[in-house]
Length: 426
Image 1 (cartoon, one colour):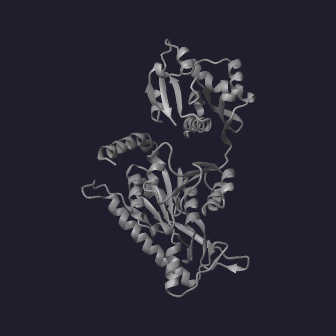
Image 2 (spheres, helix red, strand yellow; image 1 turned 60 degrees about the vertical axis):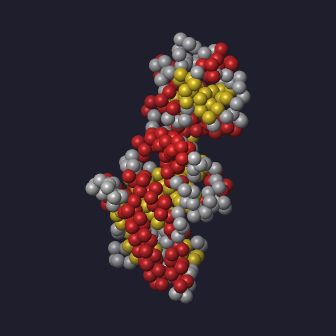
Image 3 (spheres, rainbow, N blue to C red; image 1 turned 135 degrees about the horizontal axis):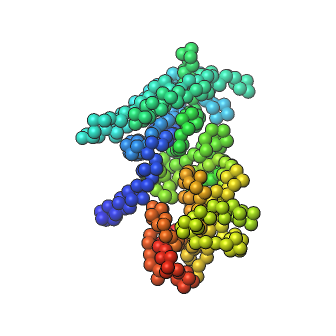
């Protein structure tokens, strides 16, 4: 690729990333990577990307696994590798191997991250990698007649201690070992450690880096994820986490260069986001939603942001609408209309109740319209807006001219209202 094309791509990435840099600042992200990823050539690049994320103001907790490192140590010593129901039976030999593996991997990560966080000539206000005894644990015990010995379950995550380090903009590194008040050490599952830590910290995101390709849809609900249970080894653990611990998990292919950066700082991302079925859903509207839609859009109509619509008009066009329903209340809506050009759809009436203009609800509505438009074979969306053009520009829309509108929209264009014409390529 020519150098000028590379430079242009880099500039476009930074322009797209800008709003996400602001949005993610001071948010807590738990990033988990298995021991298999540690063994790969791209491992150093992943840590460099994590250093970038932390340098941009995000508060990062990094959790690593050690399964292959433990196995390799046991094999080299001629000792048995024992699992039951996919859970390691950690005898004395396996515990020693786990302790050695944790120390080895932790030192690897600390070396690379320390260098990446503090390059030559950087500010003296150093960011550090902090690890320590943040997790207490208890034994799994005997299940189905099997004694798991030193395999543990998480008893408590010292969230206050972790938060103090995050407030200092340090990266907190957690190894899959926990300790009891009596001084016993227990081998933990790194996936469970990441989930329990995210819950304790009320983290904004959980990102799991997969050592195998992620061939899943970009978004799945918990119910939909059940259909893919056998297609990725981490799906069962993610489903368990969503049922009991966290709201959403991002699953990424670790081998894709820059997957963390693209997932966090681009509109479309690159991985699979799996979300729990909450009491808030985006769905197609029905006639029963008309009153709720009118309550959401009326303040914006009165302010001149939206064109006024009568109840009768909404009733006739209800099949074009999607709504956000939260605990049986309509808190957002959007419509997708056909135009004279079958390849262009019109996005209209995007509105969110004033009390709920957070948690990216407007963006969720936009993403759902994009999904529907693509399913209908459209390759562009258009929007006519008077006051929100900047919001749409940040999400990939570009300004155009009235003459660029499809014929039916051009004929009905209200020059007195003087709306901006904007398009988005799908």
